Length: 543
Image (spheres, helix red, strand yellow):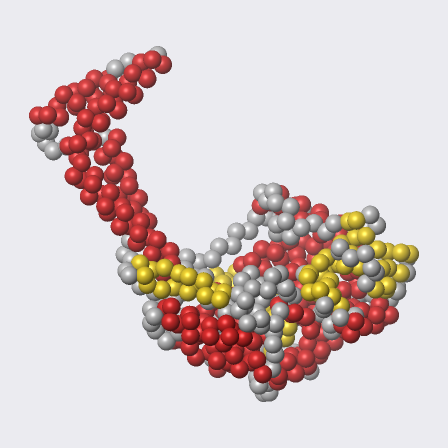
C-alpha cells in the first residue's frame, strides 16, 4: 500500500498553533484509541497486551513519583491515577532534555490540559537515550543598531554521549550560564524566564550530576507553577521496566519478520517523499551474515557510545545478542518465535546490574508508548514524520490499525525589535529596478529628453526588425542592449534610490529573520509572553 504524502509545516505567524487533528478533535481521538486498545489483546510471547498495559502503567507511574520526589516535585497527589483507575486515560508526550523552543514545550501543556479535561493524567517521557545536538543556545543581542546572535555555552562539549550518561563537565560554565546570557542580551528582552529559573537548574546539582536531568527538573518545576502537573520519567528507566522488556522480547523473537516489514515500509516511505538519502528518516535495519540489526540501541556504562543491537538466532529456542562493533556476546536469551519470553525477560533484567544499557530507538519508543502505555500520544512535527513510517510498520507487524496521535507545534516570536520591511515590498522594488534596467524607455518623462531620442528610435527599429534568422535575432539583442545602455543614465537617479531602498529592505528582512525566529530557547522569552502563549494555545479544549 502506498502511503499518501503528508506535509507538516511549522506555522509562520506569531502565536499560531499547528494541531493535526485540531485540538477540538483530541477527545474523539482519545476515545477512539481507548476503544481500539481495549479490544486489542495481542500476545507478546506469553503476556497479553491488556495485562502488559496495566503492568506498564503501574511501573512507569510508580517510578515517576519516585523520580519527581528526588527533585522535590512529587505533586501528583489529588490527580487521577491511570494505574489504579482504568477509566482514567494517560496522555503521553516526550522530548530530549534540552533547552527547547516554545513550539516543543507546548506539548507538555497540551498533555496536562487534555488529561485534565478527560479525567486522566499527563506523562512526559524524558528521551535521555538521545545525544545532545549542542551544549549552547543562540542568544540575541544588539551590535549598535544591528540585531545579531551568538551561541552561549552552558557546559563543555563532551562528544556524542547519550543524555543518560552525560554529566555536567564544567560546573562553573553551567552555574554562570544565565549571567553570561543575560549580560549579552543587555535587557533586549524584558523579564526573561532564564533569570528566574536557572537557579533551579543549578540547585538540582544536589540531586544529580546529569546535565539533562537538571534541565528537566527546572522545566518541570515551571510547568507545575503554571498548572501543568504531568508525571515524568526518563526513558532509560522505562526501558528497564518489565513491561518494556516483554515488548522488546517479542520484537526480538520475531526480528526477521519485523526487519523485513521495517525495511519494506522504509522503501515505500522514501518513494512517497522522494528521499534518496540512505539515512533518512532512519537507516534500514542491516544484516552482518546471520546477525540481524534490531530496532534498539545497546551500550556499556563504561563506554557510553550508542551502537545498534545485533541478534543471532542460534536455534529455534535460543538467541545471542551483541553490540555492533564488539566481538563479545552481550547476552544469551532463551527465546525464539514460539517460546514464551519469561526467562528472556529475567535475563534482560540482569543487564543493568552488569552496566549494560538496552534502549529503544525513535520508532520503537512511540510504538511502545502508543500500544502499551498511553491512550493518546502527542508528537511534534519531527516525531509525527517519523511515525508515518512507524504506523506502516505497526500495521504490517501487528496486523491492526495503530492508535491515532496528535501533532502539535507552536510558533512564538520572542518579542525582539523588528523592521517594517516585507518580502513583498522587496519584490516590488526589485521588479521596478529590473524594468528600469531592461526597459528604461518606459520610465522617461513625457516628452522624453531630446538627448534620449536617438536611442529611443534605435530601440524602436530593433524591436521592429526581422527575427527569422538566428543572426537577425542576435543583432536585435545587441541593438536593444545598446539602446538600453544609452537610456539608463536618464533614469539613474531613480535606480540609485531604489538600490538604496532594496538594500535597506534586505537589511530589514535579515533582522526580521532573527527577530521572528521560533527557534530560540524558551528560557530566553519574557515570562508573561511565554506563559500567555503556552496556556492560551490549549485554553479552548472542550471540557
